[in-house]
Length: 142
Image 1 (spheres, rainbow, N blue to C red):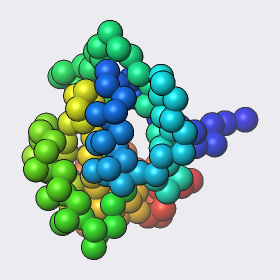
Image 2: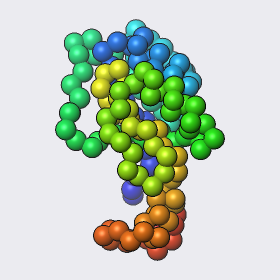
Image 3: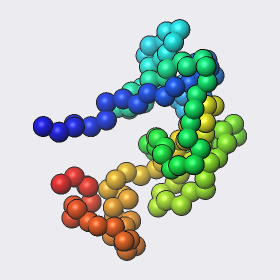
Image 4: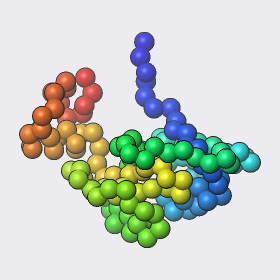
């Protein structure tokens, strides 16, 4: 037995309407359920749960933990420009692909990213990296 994949991501938010404006209206996720204390949104196979926590949200400030959203290369310039106009950046891009690192209204670290595991592994094969290779193909799946 093993984990089959990611089921959903839940983020605590202090203001549900403000979070919906960010995730639904700005990022374009589809709202599938809305209640007084939360909302479910989908983007591709991602199920994002927003949980209203009116007493405030505690987000760690000094770590690299973040959620990266997949963006088509053709859509990246316009979406990144829209997001950058309203969301603070938390770090410059240093990855192999196009990325924008931004904060949501509650300070959750997010990333818009063009690419996938195969493109990342291919990049590391072309540009040596001190990683320990487990899989020898670019799928990353052993």
